[in-house]
Length: 275
Image (tube, rainbow, N blue to C red; front, side, top):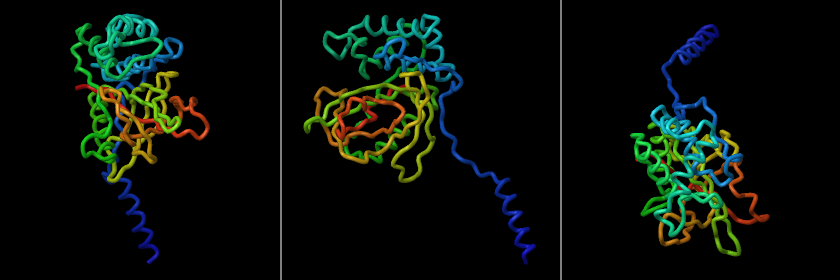
């Protein structure tokens, strides 16, 4: 009896090892073995254009052509050529009497999208037009549906060969009034290709231009209440927990600006993906 049990166990192990069971692999940037642009020695308020360059660099060969057509032999030269021609040299179509990119203030999500599309069309790159996507709740949508929407959108962009840009913002409560205290752009590098039923979060790897490093974080349904506003709309209204939260512990994201025990939330506000 013991011998039969051992034999049965043996065949069970062999069967499991030789079965056709498959596991979902993460979806990753197409150009994995490359070096990220580090904004720190170039422009400390340049996270938007730097993240765009990293998206072109880490993307598929089709998107790599954008970097090849950007004049310059160093990251600093490429960055300066991009922002001087399509950022500081062009007025914003959305902010009165302001340039798309300001070295002291950086760039917003809409102007960064305009900058990218202007560059692509001006250089006749024959690349898909880019769009920005608001990741705020709308209509009857709840946070679970928003998590699924964001996941689907970001996976598609990675599959299409363009590592999407993520717009991250930190809001803080100051004397019962919530205000944005920090904004940052990063480039998504890797994420799970599917979400399990009832998921409340998913882990991602992203390229932080602040240091040009690959880091790991979590995008999640909010665990606490906070207030934030969609800065892409004309009527600014602070809404209760209107987005997904992020937990990116390796990126400071303005948390050093907080006072002890000050309430805050760091959110995923927007993304940039191909149309």
